[in-house]
Amino acid sequence: LALSMLTRCTARGLPSARGLAAVAERRRAAEFLQLFDGDAPDGGGSSTYTYILADGGAAVIIDPVLEQVDRDLAALSASGLTLTLAVNTHCHADHITGTGELKRRLPGLRSAIARAAGAKADVLLEAGEEIGFGQRRLRVLETPGHTDGC
Image 1 (cartoon, rainbow, N blue to C red):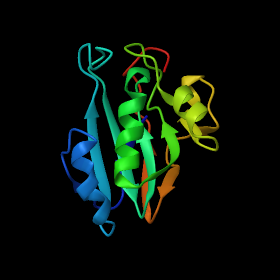
Image 2: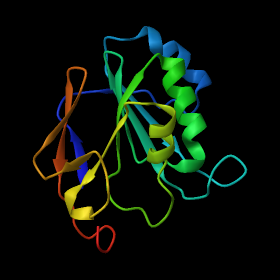
Image 3: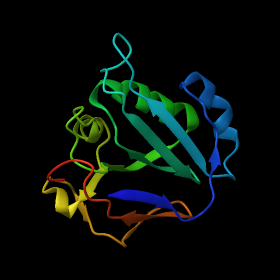
């Protein structure tokens, strides 16, 4: 499962929540935040990239990592964003997803994963479906073979 942005977004390249405060004032452009789970003590060591995409204050998070939930929530808060959906692109053998903890801390947050993954989620995605946030949309693309069984 891969997600393809259907509309242009602005890459900001901001690595920390502190640098995100200025982003909150730039509501007109879509936001794209790439975050990395590095080695301890700051991370879980999975080398996973997590993405926060936002438009008009509504945000989705892609592939959150359990050890980085505090970081991700701080980034969302600093930007004044409301997280509406946590998406896992596949079953992760390299880390424990942070989706469950995000849902525990943010009542009403929904989760999504490909139906083919066989995992539990609020939304089971199929190739060709779209995920909306603000005025932006992501299209679900099937990319088999990344992780066996997922």
